[in-house]
Length: 281
Ligand SMILES: C[S@@+](CC[C@H](N)C(=O)[O-])C[C@H]1O[C@@H](n2cnc3c(N)ncnc32)[C@H](O)[C@@H]1O
Image 1 (tube, helix red, strand yellow):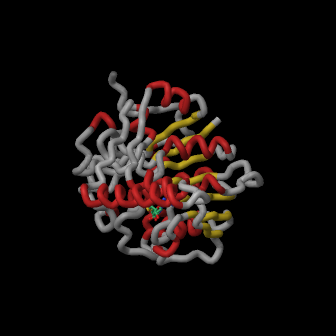
Image 2 (tube, rainbow, N blue to C red; image 1 turned 135 degrees about the vertical axis):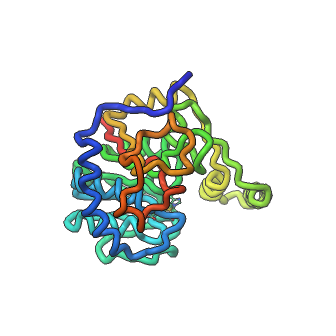
Image 3 (tube, helix red, strand yellow; image 1 turned 45 degrees about the vertical axis):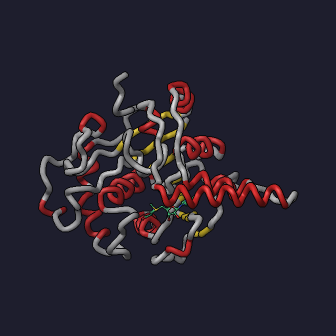
């Protein structure tokens, strides 16, 4: 069963349209507030997201996964007239705090998004199972979705849509110490449940499911999700990164070699994480 790269209805832009925005983006990127954003968005992903925001111009952007705040800054500075809702279960990590974004530490699924603009876009950079996020977006009738870290089979740290398409169930290996800790948490939950009749385990069990993020995959699982997808587009890598060995899973890079103007910004060994745009029907 060969699959590799899913594609559905070409979006209204070409590779040239993307590369034509590079100069504009470099000017903006120079002013980014967080110079070392390890663990967060880097040039490659920020540029793809910048391009998409400029193209779609959503009136409201909901971002799930703020971390130090680089993506909040990017959204704010790319579309100064749009509104931003910024969600992260741990907002204490922020180094850049926007004056206009509405922050919340409640999970995306618990919000009331019944009165949002038609062209709202949600950006998921929170390492939560992509399938759950797509079902929730459909529930809220949000049509424009961006998935960060849409890794291929065997990569990443949670179940992605690209893996599901390739019928690959994500297998998380958090390490022995982490698993022992998880076991202690789990036993604590069961003890509390035995001795406290009013104790509701749900929140604590959810915390455990974040610690061991195994996914599941089935052809029907993907086909059911496929029914709600109108357009699926993986942004191509800017260059051929050295860590991208699985060629068949990766689109052709936009440039054959590193353009001079990108030498100061791009890490040629590792930067691509399959940022993907989806439009739901
Ligand atoms: C990769 S970082 C986000 C990077 C950020 N977008 C940037 O521009 O650098 C992932 C973030 O997701 C957050 N997170 C984890 N689970 C979450 C959830 N259920 N909802 C929202 N954020 C979550 C983590 O606390 C972490 O800050």
